[in-house]
Length: 595
Ligand code: GTP
Image 1 (cartoon, rainbow, N blue to C red):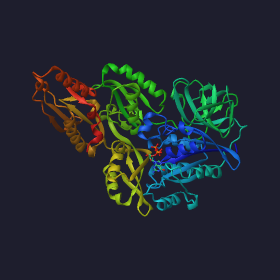
Image 2: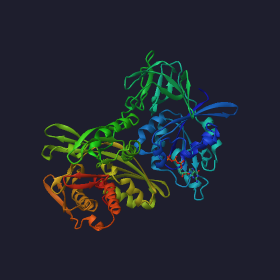
Image 3: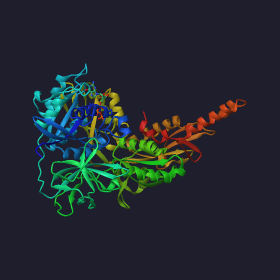
Image 4: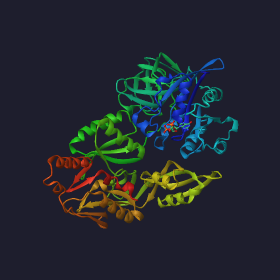
């Protein structure tokens, strides 16, 4: 145990975590250079494309240092606010963390909140100033930020470049020197923390764990404390480039467990593994059930594909335990599913995976947060969709989720950021200078205002120099109303939204205008109306098409005509017929892009 080092990497997206991690693996010969894929730690295609580590994994390196052999377990952490609970569990599995900061960018909000988590867990922090090869690197200034933040000495900061391979050995040595060996008693009852799981279609779910106390043996009967389920530890082992099975693993170690689990739901990140024979009485602290923050409907474009969509969702859920869903019907869209996501990024990922991995074409409806309606009739009702909103006469009051948002930016953007946040019903709580031109601002805001386009807007007004992190702080009373959209007099439930009353008129007007742009012209006129209850608050019209598009081809050659028809058909792929009006997918998400 004395020579084990368990560590994770805290870094903002794009600050070079994957590149540097690759260098560590290369230097310790964990992977031969020719085996190196571009970025080893990010497994899924999608992740690579997005450059975001969606799921954390772990890898073991062996390193010779001062004549001794060290086992270094790197536990990967996702770098996006949607996945902060996963990050917290990875951190809980480590004794140390590399804090990687891009020398040309400085510290970002996400980094700070993860860093606080790490410090709160008593992790030893090794600061690394990365990308020092960049001509516009600002090593002095960024070092000042790091020193301010963690109170280290300037000499403690390692200068590195993943790209040029600078500082790699220093980092490995610092891991051995500075990070404490794991504590824990191998003789105690087993307590192993689940920090991640991965679905494997042949072997079932692979559970990744860190043993805090006790010893785990192959073949032993184990129990997951929070779910209460028991399994056979069919195979255990360590995670190298390939898995290496072991017969016994004890306190301090990181590894995987295979026990024929088929459904990701049974494996909860943060749960504790113990043995049936000699169980611990104490679960590891910090376990939480994952809570979806954003809800939206997912519908097949072709109504006949509902069953296929269901089976795709079931498969998807096998390896994405954070995704929750239940069947839902919409008058406009027919049969589909109401899904809960960790955040907007998670929602986009699910939609993309359905399309890529399962070849489904789906329509996603306006995302909504979870409101609470307090009614005079049925007491408190949870509202995940506009359609679940009770009749206005029964509503006593409505509460919505609020967050604490932490934004870090340059001082020149303070003005625009504050006005953006106020426009989103935010209240400025504090403003602190991290350095002479870097400011941290804290706001309290409704979650509903930031799930839409807030982050994009923030990036735009700050020219990319702003980062955002947020956490839920509870529910507060708000004057929310349901806004309905009607097309030719017919209510399209999938276009309804729950909005703040002060914004409803503006919202209704802009939404009608946007829909006018997005709805294709048809052979007849389309009236677009926004209404609160019975009251129409806005109206726009899509004029009828005057000419038949095919008329152009009259007398022309048939293949051109066919091409034109096919083109139209393709364009139709993501359209839904509601009453006699065709609605393209963009229209269902029009509210996300109102200006
Ligand atoms: P996520 O996986 O999205 O969290 O990103 P990451 O932090 O893992 O960053 P990644 O290693 O993918 O690098 C991001 C970008 O920075 C890539 O375009 C890299 O080529 C580049 N990059 C990484 N390290 C260095 C470095 O030391 N110097 C320079 N100049 N560029 C680097």
